Image (cartoon, rainbow, N blue to C red; front, side):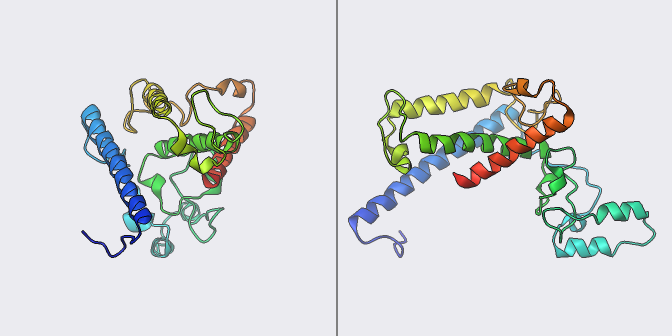
Length: 240
């Protein structure tokens, strides 16, 4: 094969082969998931709930220079209030228009969606993924520090958190994968894809776990709590 970047020493060769093996296993799992999703949903790849009806053209949706210039060059016969709404600036990126796909989501006032993902994919699915990854990373950040002092029964204590993943025994890995799969497959009542997981008007990230803390609070307090969770999750994703 191609060996221009292949290490010369035995240790380097071993690490390179090990990386190839692990990446191959990950790819096999990923492809198995794709096939499983296709069989269960009967839908073609990529199983995305793409927004079909768009009020603007692809050029107008672009949040970069070309799209902004086209928006500025619109006919003066358009209603003034429509022009004002269209040219409203993003709070986080003042040189870009305010994204239209974030309406109704917590934190929409920040207006950060430079690639207009929320105008192409279901924004509820995007927010759901962001919240779930943020929650996992918040737990992982705590675990990254705590694992030096606390060890689950049956696991090998490891001082270096970066090496803890390699010291876990097969039974521990199996239990972790099973638990994650069980939670993921039962949280939606059997609805596993973004095409049907929000049937029944469920809010993104709402699994009826911990929502009791929001009872009795007004809308402003609830929104503030949700925004704190969102921002802490984003910080945790960057930290971990």
